[in-house]
Length: 346
Image 1 (tube, rainbow, N blue to C red):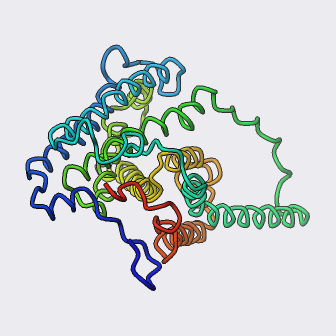
Image 2 (image 1 turned 135 degrees about the horizontal axis):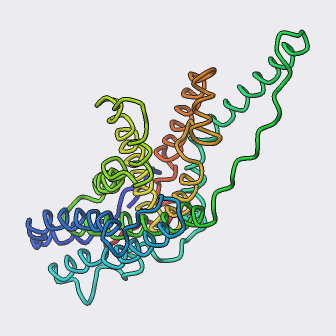
């Protein structure tokens, strides 16, 4: 609730707080059970990808592989609410949970409209400055090449390369639709209520849930695809060092934790899964901030010239997003913008 003269939002008392005040706080055993349940959701989400009915020896972007993994994710999403239902049963909150199941899982329609638009719009902020810096750098490089070519200091330009192949429809459907829906359902809608009802404080749960989301993405580095394994076996380059193998994993874990934290905070603030899912699609489509455009190609060109400006612009974009979220009256002011947030009144 909001105190007089204070514009910042304070979460309304939760059901756990009410239980604690009445001397009927949830048993301490429920907290480890909720953590184990969150771990099981993460393990099941990854393990089902490698179960024989869903495992594929084809490349990751092959339509058959995508279809099999989509089926595995569908099974994982069907199993994901079970730990939450068990916890509600153990706490005696079934068949009358503290909120409607749709609201508890973030499936209620987003009201008002900022609950749907704020997460994807804020997710664009880390990309905009780096994209502008890259465009300015490219424009300056092209102008410099034209001037040098006019003075005869450069050979004539080579013929234009062939246009890059467009991603297959199955890849776009996976990255922009299937993966955001499945991951937001499993790691936001099912994990966050599970942790809070298990005894994790509302302000701490959005910081813990991304750990499971981040660790669920580590399997790409430990279980390479058959195509990647064949390419590595046929390569004449020596084995990479331990540091070279660890850096991509650290970047992956750091980025997925940062995005999971952002999505969790916005999910709790808005009380709706729609905004977090849309933001997930935006980030999947644009890739890692600071590598625009074209993912790694943009990063390689920026590393040659202007990498410092690109990194500074990305940092400025992240700072702008954090400021827009954390400032008084900002996006996390759920009481002002979103009607109280996910856990208000539980």
